[in-house]
Length: 388
Image (tube, rainbow, N blue to C red):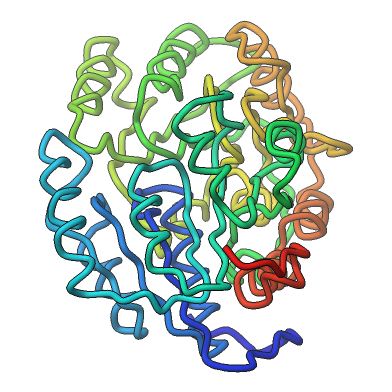
């Protein structure tokens, strides 16, 4: 993907950026991929150092082909992950030097403390909290406290971080979404109110996102007058936990194979195709940061229903075309889901209005400029000119 040089970021010299961690599937993968492409388009030298990854080889090779250096051992996040950490601690000094202007640490991880050693004197280390504010006196709190600057994914997390670490500059910058989502034209076509609705869950198949409860919902409401004809599509893998197989068996046991489909893993390059015929995206999660897949859907004019876990609540502010239910109560989510389906069938959703709302707050043009400034002009962006 090519990016136009449409910002005013000027690099006095070729900046060297080290990205620590971030090689997990889902929103972090999308964000890191696009961020690397942007930084490379600005002439930066980009290295990713991680102790583990569950990206597929195609995604890793795509970034390498663009000139991004990736240092990651051949172990995932499972029971052999300790070997990956050991190899990284041993191997990084042989493969890297203390030469990076900025070390960007995404998400929690002990290896950030190792990555910091490769920042030049007077450089900057930035911690990016992608879920929620760390607990006081926790390991993550200590890591964040050792940084030059901090980024929160949502305004609420940023507020908490400022209270926790008032001496460190903190700002809110959401995950990057693709330019493709911004450029996608929403064409309103009048559709039959009795059509089959395609409802999608996109993300890792893990217990806290509650895909099993969604399956139960479709069992309970398959003949309901509000839901009507519909199909639930579950997209995502389980990172080898075996949870997907449990869900597949559950669907078969309930006799819902014609109403519920489990499609497995997908990558960001496939997202536009996945969302092409989706009427609604749902996420009844117990905890989140700011789910990028919801923003991607909304950028394409697709309404969402989600619990207000983490920064998700902010997607509902002054937004008539999504429903973010209060807290994480399942019954409240069910009520919101039924209400949204009724709104879709009665054509009360304005897809173009939803796209405009999303672009104003999370669109590629605005957010990409914020990330360029944060990583390429860190001192000015955060007002932190001091050395580490």
